[in-house]
Amino acid sequence: MDIVQSGILEEETQLARYITFAVSNNENIIQTLKNLADIIDTSTCVIGIGKNILNKINCNVPELRTMPTYSVGDLEIPSTPDDLWVWLRGNDRGKLFHQSRKIEEICLPAFEITSAIDSFQYDQNRDLSGYEDGTENPHGEDAINAAILLEGDNGIIGSSFVAVQQWVHDFEILDEMSVEEKDDAIGRHISDNEEYDAPTSAHVKRSAQEDFYPEAFMLRRSLPWAMGMDGGLMFVAFGNSFDAFEAIMERMVGEDDGIVDALFKFTTPITGSYYWCPPVKNGKLNLSALGSNFTK
Image (cartoon, rainbow, N blue to C red; front, side, top):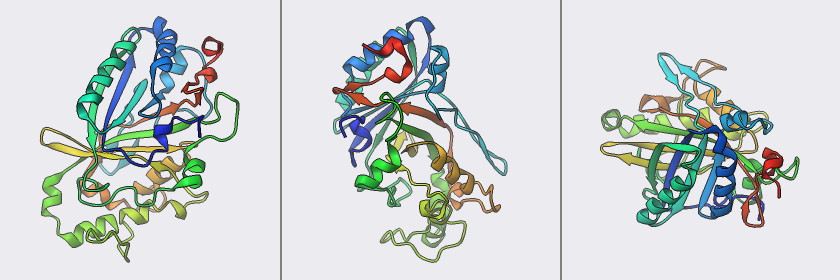
């Protein structure tokens, strides 16, 4: 689909860099976004815009909102909204680093970096816990239907919403768990990735997308991250709204039946943000939904 940021639908990338920005100068937001739209290669870079930017330039994208917070006992799952999100994809870490420097330079008149996290593919799409990630991802037309807005105004069709969380794993706890305990927490055998009759708290049972009404399918593009001796998962999920993500998170924290996802035994999200990913027109970001300042 030539109206979609193609990186959203590409199935694999070896390396990635996730960069977030906060507004530092309101007056320069519009021109900076225009400059960014002119240079971004949407096959290797995906751009997401946060709700705060829209508030500052007095425009609206229907259904873009701030990620809610959730509670699991004493654990608070945070909402940490940023204003601009950049996902760089590739297979050379040095090139990604220099691409991020170029993007930072373009963004500096209006934005300052709040985080830059490097991610990587591990053992053919495994999470650092050792389990395969994204097994139930939709493909082909199903992926497009799940992730892309196919109706609406011309500046909306082809866009997407993305939920982004940085999860930190407790590897000491993982090391102490037996294979059986870890399998029961995930709901799949680590040996062959097959589901089995696991406890009702198993992650695959709490998050089975087809078990919701309406079905809660998202297109996941998550990758492991590591910094120093810490690591975990950069959870990235694209949808045609945020409804599927919120339905699954509510089920994971036990809002409907009090059963908490066993995933929380060894991993915790420390950030959480929502963004709108604009469509593409003639190979460039189409920001026309943001108002007359972005139409030519």
